[in-house]
Length: 181
Image (tube, rainbow, N blue to C red; front, side, top):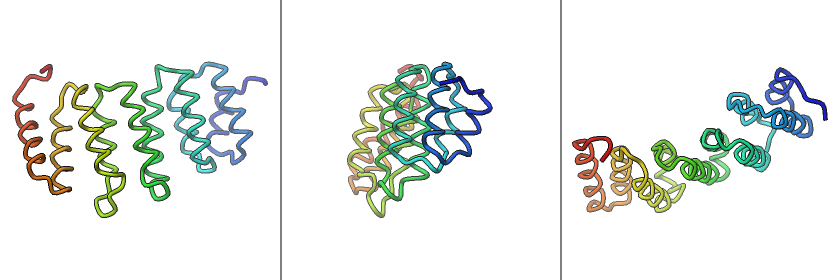
């Protein structure tokens, strides 16, 4: 397969509705070792692609370019959160926030963004899974205050005032400590 120009790859990622054409552009980009997250963001926003196809592209990118895996997973999660949440109850978004956290467990964003997916009226994604994910995050994130605050809020939503207060106090205490503690 001949290498496509970056402009042609960009065009196909943005406007093509044909999976084979998009796939060829993707293969060309990977073969040329194009490690530009901005280029692949165009691909992820192509509305002609199914969730399975987006996952295929994202997983391949993360395995080919470990240096951008975190950004790929975060971007996919945000695409699924905005675009497919109605159909899959945020499952894909949370799955990719978890993958991002596995790449960089010390970053608070995947945990906080996953918690932002919560729809209290529908209890989706399941609040227990979000609470567990945030608790896991507190073991890795350096500045835990925002995670503690979010945990306090989630426990308040489920009516567990004791745990809500526990995490509210931990958030207050963590703001008094140095960032490295």
